Image (cartoon, rainbow, N blue to C red; front, top):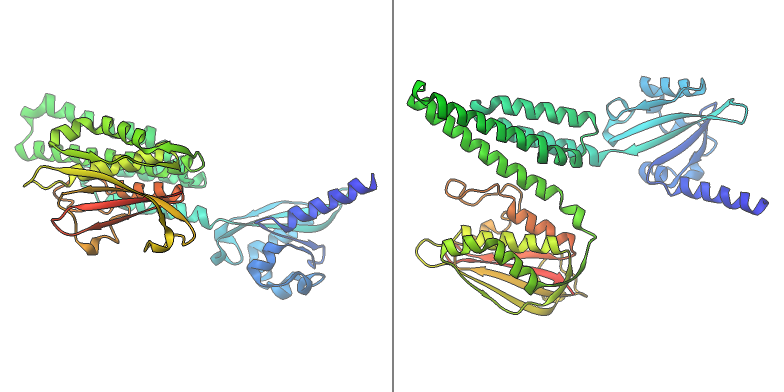
Length: 395
C-alpha cells in the first residue's frame, strides 16, 4: 500500500511539473511552495531560487496590480478567482489566471494555487476574425446591413473564446444561408418592381447581387481552408493515377468547354490523404483552365519524377536526408511575372482581379494541403509563357 501511495505522489508531481501551464503554489504568507518547469521557462527564475521566498520579491507586479492582489487575498478566504488577460498583472504575456485556495482535510485554507494559461493562439484567432470583419466592411453600402450582421456574429464568437472552428461551422451554415436569402430578396425586387425602379437603381441592385455572389465564393473557400487540418492525420498509400482520374471527371465539363488537351504520365504511389491530394490537383487543374491564353488552345501536362533527393531541392521545407516523389502540373497559359512567385501562395492574393473571378485562396489551399502531408509545393513561370506547379511528396 505504501508503494502505491508513493507512486501516486510521484505521478501527481510529474503531472504538475510537465504541464504546459504555469503552476505555482503559495503558503498563507505568499511564500512560494511549488514552482513547475513552465514557470522556470517563462520567467527565467529557477525553482531553487524562489522556493520558500515571497512571490512579491520576484514578481512585484502581483502586489501592485489591484486585481491580482485582491484575488490572492480572496483565495485566503476560500474564494476562487479568474483573471482574464486584460486584467492580469502583466497583460503583455497574453495569459489568463485561475487563483484557487488550497485547503486541508478540515477545509482550512493552507495556501493558494495559481494556474496561468497561455492564450496567444486564441488572441491570434480573434485578430484573424477582426481582419476578416475589416474586409467585409469594404463592400458597398447596399450590403452594409449584411456587414453589420457579420460583425454581430463575430462578437458572439468572441464571447465563446472566438475559436476558428466555431466560426467555420457558422459560416458554412447560417452565414451562407443569409447570403442566399439576401440575394433572393434582391432578385424578387428586380422581378416584381423593375418598372418602378430607375435604371441606376436596377444597376446598383445587380452590382449588389454580384458582390453577394463574390462573398458566397469567399466564404466557401475560407471554410474549406480552415477545415483542412481535420484531414492531416488520415494518411494512406494512394494511387495518384486513380486520384487524378477522379479529379479529371469532376473537371471534365470545364476541360471540354475550354477545348483543352490534357496529357498525363503514369504517376507514382504516394503516402497522403486522398481528400487533400484531390484538392491540390483540383485547384491546380482549375487554375490552368482559368488562366489560359486566349490566342492558343489550352494544353495541360502532368508529369512525375521518382525519388528525388532533398539535398538537390532548393526549398526551405526540403530535408536533405529525405527523398521525394515530384508531380508537376504544367500549362501553356498566361503565366505570371517571377516577382509574383513569392506572393502567389498567399491567402487572398489574386492575379488580374479585374479580369478573373476567384477569392485568391485556391493556391493557398494547395500549399497548406501539401504541408499537412509533410510535403511542399513550388512554382515556376514567366509572363505569357505558362506556369508549372511541382508537388513534392516525401517517400
